[in-house]
Image (cartoon, rainbow, N blue to C red; front, side):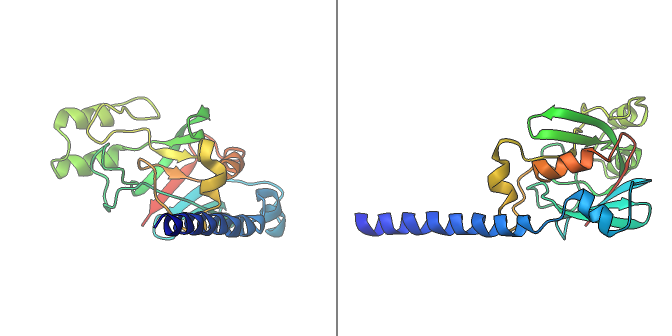
Length: 206
């Protein structure tokens, strides 16, 4: 009995190590942003935009209409299609902008988006998810980043992995674990922050 348990435990460990090793090999093939730009014939980026696909687990970096690089992305662990609460762990869909950049975050670095925006607030009010007072808090805000003092919450963004970067970035499968934000590797958030600024447009699709 004990021997079988030991064999089973060793098998699980070896399987996990094998998956991580496979992920390392896959990541070694990833071009840097500089290499991707060179392949596209670009020396600089203009009108940078981020287009994110939840279904494809991708974050696409555009310069004008040119797709420069695609990054592996992970999303909120909530399974809903529409974000209705700060506690549902769903990644919102819609058109946003970067409203703040934090280079010393728990998840290494984070670019916050202006969720919930006025469109999110209007939809939530129409569907009786928030009150008129909460709608006013969001719609009348003068800050680039919205208040978190409504049912919809705030502080959604694009961040790194943080302390467990080596393990999570090398998993060869998608595993959604965030509170609704979009996660990429620490190395990838470094690349993105080098070209993204406040007011950069972000589109999040299914």
